[in-house]
Image (cartoon, rainbow, N blue to C red; front, side):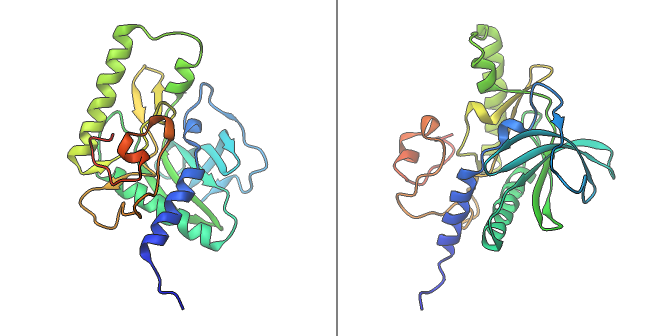
Length: 230
């Protein structure tokens, strides 16, 4: 019988993470569509208010934390079986551990991770706005000063993450929200590597993780990366 390989679990988790790309729904241009075909209307302490975005792998909802009385975004992935559920829970907890180290106005906080009534979820800050890729995809250019301010903010967020030993590994325009005040907010630390935890980001040589159009050469080649790759 083949021995259990923890690195194989890590690879499966990362592969699952690559398939779940719902970040663009964390805060859209509108408050969200009324929820459809979601029962119950409560997920634990979270009231499901509206659907923000949906894809083949799951849905992001705008929710209301009834205990703390605040708006949240709740990501609920579609999972085929118990193994996929366990992998996704590990991925969500790893993401939450990474973000728990951080406190920055341009990094979206994570409030909760868990499983309720068979549904795995992650609850995070609700950002009302649009993703940067949608903004630049509207056929207009950003003013140089506006672009410079966005870059400065994002660089500040990335520096804060790196100072706390967190490497994002999937920074791209779809993972940056622009809120109602024009402030950029970095999302989706699902591929994050904790540099001071030996088991947080170890993969086999040649394993490619990330979004190809935004990857550094060393990331494309499947080599271990550090903050310079971000």
